[in-house]
Image 1 (cartoon, rainbow, N blue to C red):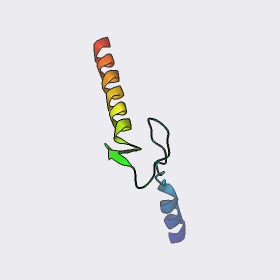
Image 2: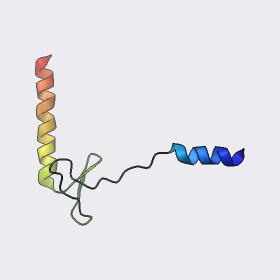
Image 3: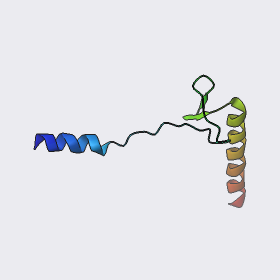
Length: 66
């Protein structure tokens, strides 16, 4: 019974997937050249700024529709 409970507890935790590609340009993220902002890894500062600009535009568009 104790072993069954231990097995269900370990199986219940999903493994966090390692982010391997940049969310903006889909390039592979290399360990030495990664840019981390707001909980997400980017391949470069340029991609982070592009994503930041895109989300700001989407937010403004959503506010204008209200």
